[in-house]
Amino acid sequence: MGKHARSVSSRVLNRILRHGRGWVFTSDDFDDLGNQDPVATVFKRLANRGEIRRLDRGLYDYPRVHPELGELSPSPDEVARAVTGRAARLQPSGAYAVNLLGLSTQVPMRVVYLTDDFTRIVKIGEQSIVFKTTTPKNMATAGRTSGLVIQALRHLGKDQVDDSTVQHLRRILTEDDRRRLLRDVPFAPAWVAKIMRQIASAEES
Image (cartoon, rainbow, N blue to C red; front, side):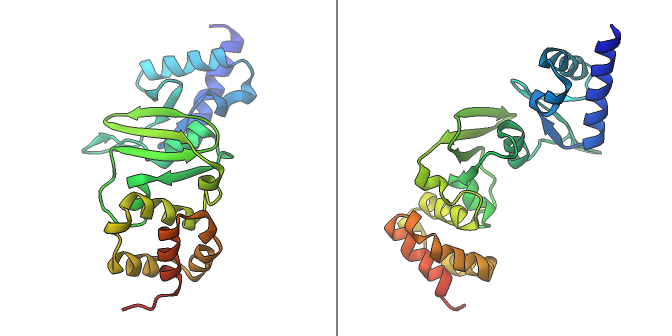
């Protein structure tokens, strides 16, 4: 191994260790080191030695380790940040939005993020993390609690949303969140908009 290769290897490993266990990363996180081919070679070598774990094409982590369960899977959000970059806009959707709002305790095996950038599916064990392009209207509330509420309600469907759903969301949302719901009503389907108004104004029963 030449001097430059040793330098790249050392810098890659030091950065991984500095971020600590649980970090999910791609070669883009090392683009300041120049040509990505040597970085990819270091990733492969570290993965073969078991020091890091290959999750999917071009995607790795420095896994957390449980004393009894062994290596733990990264969270969907950690994977999403690594795949899309921190500047990307993402909107959790479907059953995952329902779970994030506490309307279901079950973490879905298919986690869907809406994005205005690209489409990709990442497989982490038995779980699929799906990045799906969508309309500007769906992305208008990305990154806000109102966007999560809209997507969760759409997934549940009109017939599955009742007073207990409204009361639960009202309890967990802050006053700022509820005010934001009213401002974001124009971005929701009519029946969802009606429920958003109920969440923002209903009193606890």
